[in-house]
Image (tube, rainbow, N blue to C red):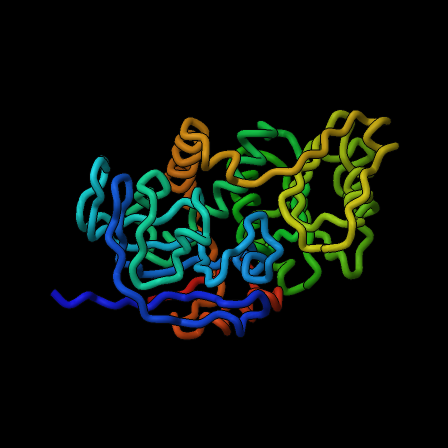
Length: 333
């Protein structure tokens, strides 16, 4: 029997988007505990940019695959896998090594525990834009911080897919949302998706603006994608006993520890990644249940930005690095 060949994105050197190459390889066969998907769409994430640059939590072993999020149709099932049938519409949950299971491909094999059925009302592109953003936001706001009605959360770099998801989840919980962005165009979108206050940090003082919005008591929670020197400002607007959750490194400068503010107000400052949730089966099931319920009961859907074709993968990565997007960048196959 002639082997079927598929297209897969790989990179053989660290660097910019131009290191991404589409290569032909044999279609994989699932092993025990794995599923194979015919891929329909990909969701792009900042983690994949950092990974090909050699700046991510996982170090690539060249040549390397990449990619966390894909939606598709189950077309082969490995031994011992239950809960899935041929033809099921599913998407991947980031709970694996990109170097081993990277999903930028026509056809992928992934661990069955990292696959979930996505809500039927979503398109394949929305299905591919689902789990990274909503689980990341859920883990911080719900699982860790127990954000609730009457509380206030400050979300930085809020126009990212995770930032949008965090706004949607916070409003679903009944919290007040302060969102930051650098652009007036993005500011308008953030208001439309539910932010109560939007601070344009290019022309507004963060501390003054937050104080003007909620008063001197500050915010109970900060969900920060930036890091770097801004953490001192964030500590200044956190309430007594409040929490700052750091999940991103958009600012590559050193991040100072705001010692005096932390001591004076008993602030909790912690690092966080969604793998705390996706690699713990109980916490992951709770996350998926919450997200299913929110999508079903609130009418919320993932906010999609630009869509690219598979052979435009370099252009899609360049667009992500330009920081123009609001929501999720997707790629169709």
